[in-house]
Length: 296
Ligand SMILES: [Zn+2]
Image: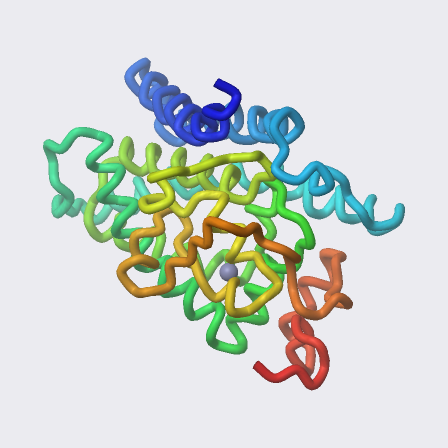
C-alpha cells in the first residue's frame, strides 16, 4: 500500500478538486467561485501538507539561505503568490466567460460530457502554451522574462507562481483567447481553471509523486523537475504546462527513468533572489541568468 501512495496523490487530488467544482456548480455556486474554492482547498491547503508528509527531497522543504533573504523570500514569493493565484483564477474565469458571451459564438461542441469538454480545452490551450513556452526558452528577450521562473534552487508548490508579471501577461493570451473566440461554456472554463490550478501546484511541489502511465498524458512532477534542471540540455525539454502530449508530438519529451534530476535553477549562482532584483533582471545590459562570457 505504501508503494501505491505516490501513484494515488495526483489522481486523488485532481479527482477531488474537479468533483468539488462540479458539485458546487450543480448546487448553484457561480463557476468562478467554485473553481476558486476547489483550488484553495485541494491546492493551497492540501499540497503544502502533503509536502511535509510525503516529501520528495526533505531538504527542499527548508529554505537554505541566510536570515535576511529568507524573510524577503517568504514575504515576496510565498504571501504575494498566495494572494495572487486565487484572484487570478477568479478574474480569468469570469472575464473569459463574459467575453465569450458578449461575442455570442457557438463554435464549441454543445452536448459533450463535461470531462470530454475539459480535455478538449486542455488540448487547445496547451498547443498555444507549448509554443509560447518553447519560444520563452529560445528567444533572448522572452527568456530574460522566463528566467525568473527558473531561478529557484529548490522546487516546492509556490514556485508555480513565480513569474515575471510581463511574462504572465504574454502566457495568458494563447491560454484564454481561443475560448473567447470559440464560445466555450463557463462551466468548462471553471473546470479548466480548477485543473490548471491544481496541476501547476502539484507539478512544482516537493511531494513524492509517481505518474506511471499518466506521465505520457500529463506534464507531471517527475517530468517537470527535468524542465527546472540547471543543465540546459535537460531544461530545454518538457515544455507542456498541463499536458505532455505536445512534447511527445514535437519531440521535446524527456523522461529518464533510471536517474534523478541533480541541481535545480539557473547557471548563474549570483542571479538575484529578491523580487526587486528579479523584476529588473530582464532589463539588465546582458542576460544575467547566465555567467558572464557563457556561450551555449
Ligand atoms: Zn520554462
